[in-house]
Structures are given as structure tokens and as C-alpha cells.
Amino acid sequence: MRKYPPATFRVIEHLRRATELAAVACAVPHEHLKLIVAVSGGEDSMALLHLLAGENSNPKQHLIVAHYDHALRAESANDERFVRDAAHRYGCQFVSERAVDRPDREGIEAWARARRYEFFERCRIAAGAHLIVTAHHRRDQAETLLMRLVSGRLATYAHAISPLDMQRRLFRPMLRVEKDELRAALAECHVEFVVDETNTDVQRTRNLIRHRVMPFLASELNPDVEDSLACEADRFRDDEDFMDAVVSELALAHPLAVRSGDSQLQELRVLPQAVLWRMLRRAGYAALGEPAFAVGYDAWTRLARLVIEPPFEEKICQLGGGNVARVSERNGIRFAHEDSREH
Image (cartoon, rainbow, N blue to C red; front, top):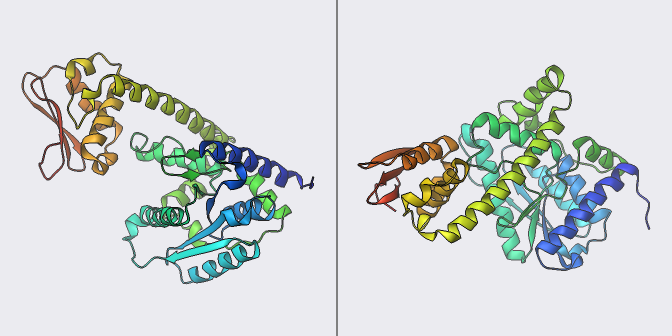
């Protein structure tokens, strides 16, 4: 058996265990797991590529390197060539795409993320791959939780990054790996990478969290804040997975409560608050689709209070984003979007 330097060995073990679990979830043998590997050329994704393709036994025909060029920097074409050359050195297939539109400055992060994940999913479908692999690690987990806490998005987004999201076919095998250990493995293996200077631009929210907020919290409040946040994210994810399972079982037992936005108020009123607002969120998603994804916790709990207090006449709850819920004893709960057509 090949001997690896210490950090490299530990990260490879993380990858091995995570990949075996992913293969089980996809119901395929480990050696047949076909992956789209998202590679920007930065240190995290190059470490992922090297450890999957260069230091591992994965059949290269099952690894497809995908690179998305956001075209936001003059040097971005060089990044594409760098990743292309690396993929060819490792004997992997390579696919890339360059953005043709540009976002408003305020929405640049959301735009960039949406575009590249749309591309990765298209690549996955075209290749018949099982999963899209990204290089998220434990520091990313901590930063994401902090971002969602301060932005109030915990009810509209997952509480934490999931190691394996089968619904979206996203696989993050290094999520439990510390950033420092990943860097140590990178150094041990002498892996080259590109540096994106926009990663230091604190006008972008994640960079502000990474370069200003997290160091301040570590120096002034808790030296282990990164690990504390990552642990809380893990706990939130476990708790939310459990609550989702509870709500799914209740929805099966009481299908009228979430069918096309119709609700039987008496059945809903006996539910605990923590279950009730999630049932309402589920009903809103079923009735409104994507527009309801932006509705936050505060709006769902306001709607829950209207449900609990018997309305003698119709009451209206503004959910935000043009989404409205109408509550009455006669009609139950009816959802509508800003075009005024009820669901």
C-alpha cells in the first residue's frame, strides 16, 4: 500500500469514506461512481482534483473536470487553460463554459453561483454522471452558517451545507476537512493553483465574513469560532433533517393540509408551532413553487399565528416578494402571487 504524507493521508481517508457512502446512496459500486468535478483552479478545487485523480484509484473515465468562466476578470481565460491542462495531465475529460451576460454589481455573488451550478448540472445530465463534486470544507461550513444567521435566511435556505444532497446531486466529500489540513496536503503534494484576486474583495459578502468578521470574532470572542460554528451547523442540519421527516410523515397522514394550498385549519391548529410553520411552508411551496422559496421564517410564523387564532372573516398575510396567504374558516388557507391568481 502506498504511503502518504500525514495531512494527505488524512484528507484521502475523508475522501474515501465519503465516496463510499455516496456510492451506496447512488446504488452503484464505488468504482462505477461517475463524477463531475467542479474545478475553478483555486487551491481548494485543485486539492480536490489532485486527491481524486492524482492520488487515488478512481477510474479516470469516471471523473469529468468541469470549469465555469464567469468572465468577471481579464485573467479568467488563463484560469480555464490552467484547469484544462491539469485535467489532461490527470487523464480526465474536461468541459468548460464562459458566461455571456453580466450581472448587476449588487447581485454578482448570487448570479455567479446560479450560473455555474446550472452549467454543472447540464454537464452531469449530458455525461450521465451520478454527482457533482465540489471542494467545500469545514471553514466554508462555518462561514455559510454565519452568513445565513446575519442575513436572516435560515428559514429560506438550508441551515448548513450538506455533505451529500441527493435532490440536487451535490457531493461535498471534504466538508469535514479543516482548511489548514487541506493546505498542508496541498503543500505535501506540491500541487499548483491559481490565485483569484477578487477573493480578497471585501465588498463581496463572503469575503467580508472571511477576512474581517471571522478574524475579529476569533481574536476578540472565541479563538475556536470556526469550529464552534461548524459544529452548530452540523447540529442544525441534523435537527432540520429530523423536522423535515416529521413534516413529511404528517403530510402523508393529512394530505389535504398541503394539497395545492388547501388546508384544514382544525388539523393544523393542534400542531406544535415548530411543526406548524414548516407545514405551512410546505403548503406554500406546493402552491406557489419557486416564488415561495424567498419567504422567510418571520412570514411563516406570522401566518401560523393567523391559523391558530380562528378568523371569523378572511385575514390576509403578506408573505413578501409578492406572495400572499388568505386565511378563513370557510376556505382554509389560499396562497396567491402578485399576479392575483389564487392557488
